Image: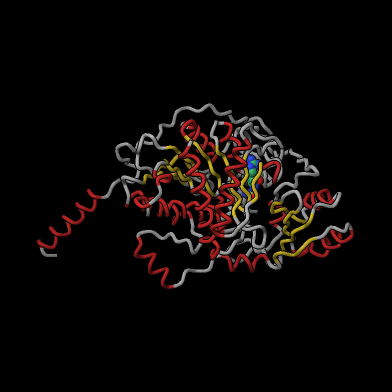
Length: 473
Ligand code: 0X9
Ligand code: ZN
């Protein structure tokens, strides 16, 4: 290399280094809230975690997919759980005794529940037991529809590779994120870092903790730094298999960060905090090994994982949560025993009075749920939560046509304690909602990637309604 060339290269490298802001180096007026000490219950080391019996009431069929049931399924050469021949049925549970029958079948591991409400439940039926379960339901006159004939086929078609044009665009964009595909954690975090680098006076990224397996829990903030701003916290991906959730949350991030200058005053007058993947270990596991994994990846003696949405410290260990690590609704050894839920509590809790809203995105069912979840009771301001929820649902319907039902989560779904929504509300955050995104059961957790944009678009309209409400208070 000639010496002139060397000087040019040296100048280029030096300027690139000096001009690239460090991702977490915040601009003036952008200081993040300090992590003050929030009192959290201490994990109870002596607690036995393997001896639990879970009561299933007539009203509450708990979301459950026991790992034992899955281990009977074949594993493909790439070590992925194979759901070939598995079916998903929507069972009507309004007949007397129907819920008991479903609970019984679930406890015998003949079926596992994907979720439901007061009148139906979606259940996964393995090929070997289809005949058996059919005759039980028929003999009891319990109606059902086969919604998914072959689950593995739907999984195979859910997330097709990008076409050539998209790949080319991806290379030019500076990050790999699209909303035409479900992405791995690396792409999502890379996208967040890219935005912080590209818009350093608006966007910043902070790691608020690490997952059980040591992955970053990254929060992205969008704020123009006005001291009068309100604040909203949004999370996604508490449940690993609910892929639409991180996809929608990152869509919001992209919209606000890329178009901030032309955004509405409501959006500009809010400090936005996004944690798109609360459960990165579980999320990665759904990509590499078991598409239907729900919990985090903490290892216990035999079974794996805590349901992070049963691990928050408000009425922890109450209804709809299990004390057995083998269950999909395992509450954990103690409130906030998991680093993922603890990181949220430390971060949000340290500035709770600052947040006007806490939104946690899940799937599926198309519900806008407000507290309480731990039991069938409502907070004193539930009428406002219901009214604002209905306005959000109205905007969603008008924009994309989807119908979302609004109500308290225990009332509309089932009692389930230890949820992040209840904890946020207990901290005095007024608008605390769980949003169960699309669909209503046609694909369930395995929603095709082509639905990301329509689902995100209509939910962005809903989020604008909430932003407006927050700003006018
Ligand atoms: O059961 C849950 O954790 C949520 N449903 S999901 O199908 N995504 O798992 C609903 C949570 C509602 N909130 C509370 N029960 N606190
Ligand atoms: Zn969920």
